[in-house]
Length: 545
Ligand code: ADP
Image 1 (cartoon, helix red, strand yellow):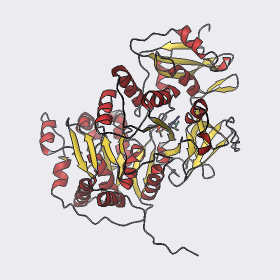
Image 2 (cartoon, protein in one colour; image 1 turned 45 degrees about the horizontal axis):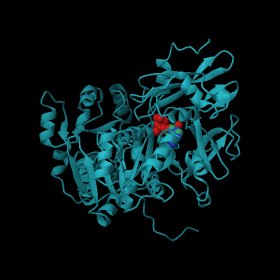
Image 3 (cartoon, helix red, strand yellow; image 1 turned 45 degrees about the vertical axis):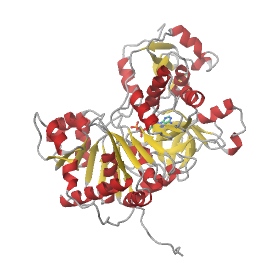
Image 4 (spheres, helix red, strand yellow; image 1 turned 135 degrees about the vertical axis):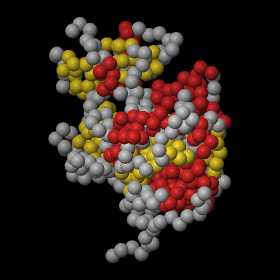
């Protein structure tokens, strides 16, 4: 017997219409590449999303065609999230930090028809436009005057300005209704090995994720919040924040191209941001800026930190010096991206601070909708004892079942997506990532967590960044070393840092050596690139070998 409830598909156009109707006057503030601070509202964003939908119709773009963006977090990008997907096309957000050849490969693989870009990325567009035959229209996210200035020294065919493109179209639009299984947006993983692979999200998966992300034990978003996503809209839809924001009607602040500590601080402060989200490297810059200038953030209540493991020292600094709660989150492109988030349970509230901290460091509990388990090398499920380590597998309505246009079989194993992360799960369901399976260090048959080694180094006052990698060893197979960038003006020696590990790790887990470098290579999403680091240290030999 079926229920007797209405069959209304869960569509992305409904989100922006809801925001316009119920939160129409709520502000969307953007730092623009034009150099100014721009202010708009949900009502105006909805009007412009509808104009964009008309513009796509007018060019005869069929449902399901891909519209790509190379853009920072900003109000035009936000409108595209709704105008493109809402009208039945697929929004393809591209990571502009990839090299131009990779971007061209991605555009061709996705067969993008339109590519909209921030003026910052004009050099990329010039480099790739004649290698991307499917693109019929290049759209600069600016007005005609800025377009003229940008192209003063030469243009390319089929280039128009976004403002010129949408201006003449009506601000009302009849959004099409279709199955919510329809594709809505896509994102390629950074592809540390081989070609990038794309997750293709649907309207349903996006909206279920938007509900889930807003829950109190997840990002706890409400109409009383002012949210600044530092996490880019070109990487897994800024962790879904634009969609959840439209659902709850919170104020939005977009940082544009300026992601340094000073610029992010200025926006957090001036716009009275209550919640911010980003990867640890961004927050490191913010903390350094605030520490150097003795600044505070009285309005900021919480930050969601994920994408790579959040060092305990960062959680502590935010809590103790600034009164900001850090919510540690874990996710992946393949999971839209949220999988787990760390908040305490009622029974933890009476625990002493150090005990609470041990929990906060974990990546957290599964969000309802995500089912998870850990398995051993034989595929057998391992116990949730907080000790057994195995590969983390997940399933749920916002987890991929396959990659877009992949020539390989589906990655699923008995319906579960293998994450490539090694984790433990404790009896309360708190998952902790110990490593990515390719980064874990295998020494004498035992596993050493590179994250543990890095976290300890990061707690040293002179250390700005630390990466632990395994180096071949004739007896132990691999031994860990820690590669360190010192904070400007601070000193620490190899011996001092190694001594700092004593008592914090078992002897055999302590790194064999410390290598000081000026910089650790960061990937397109701000994560440390250990493959590159290994290449950089190609001639390195362990002491005594
Ligand atoms: P890519 O796989 O291309 O780096 P993703 O953004 O999808 O791009 O990265 C997902 C991976 O990032 C996860 O599989 C995990 O290894 C890592 N990750 C994400 N969040 C965390 C976290 N809080 N702690 C540790 N690792 C994390």
